[in-house]
Amino acid sequence: MTKAKIAKAIPRRPFVAGNWKMHRTASDTRSLIEDIVGRVQKVATVDMVVCPPFTSLPAAAETLGRHSILALGAQNMHQSKEGAFTGEISGPMLREFGVRYVILGHSERRQFFNETDASVSVKAEAAVGYHLRPIVCVGETLTQREAGETNSVVESQVRGSLAHYPADQLDELVIAYEPVWAIGTGKVATPKQANEVHRLIRKLMASLFGAKGSGVRVIYGGSVKPENAAELMAEPDIDGALVGGASLDARSFFDIIQAARPVRASEND
Ligand code: PGA
Image (cartoon, rainbow, N blue to C red; front, side, top):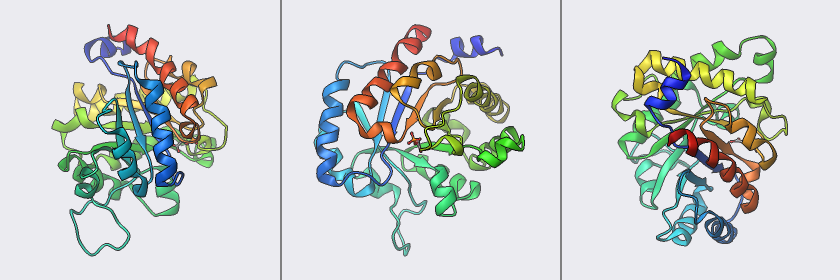
């Protein structure tokens, strides 16, 4: 199937998530959520998610109240329902606060906390079992890119991280392509560089899961800012963004959401 045909056959709604990482206490969370909600009221064509730290989730949920326009996500999850796993948080614990998404296998988790494709795969399968939508992250390091290994690294991460993923839950899945060298560095991949990898992921998803696989949203992450968001999201295989630093500023986050809006909205008509 050509790209155009895929886009037509399976409309992909733009998706923008803010990954707050280890930023914002519960009290700071309230004001940031209020500020974001105040700005995004009229956005009806983009799925919008914020992922605060675990301890800020209750404050975020409380502040959001009935404002379901903005969904809540967590930054990690343990696969077990409960148990002797000191320092971990389970899916049902997240669900209790209305969390709908969970970022899995972020490169910082892989780099600093020994997450592997195998652990991500187990978590992704468990997450959908708890009715949490996984945002599964993949991406190459600078050394790997310079060695010409980008495609093979990303392919093996996608295969490994989704090894146990149930084929009937593809609607719940989002894949984030985040080149490690672009995260928090200000070095953004060019739209063409990013789109090439997104296309590779989409083709791989089609070969792993069939037509439904190619309809899974693939979003870009790594130094996304209001200044570069529009040109990234104008690419045919980039369905949105996973935003770190710029998501901590309500105005920047809103501007990125706006950049996701018009292109996809017209494509999906
Ligand atoms: P950044 O982070 O936008 O600050 O580069 C992106 C991410 O790590 O998800």
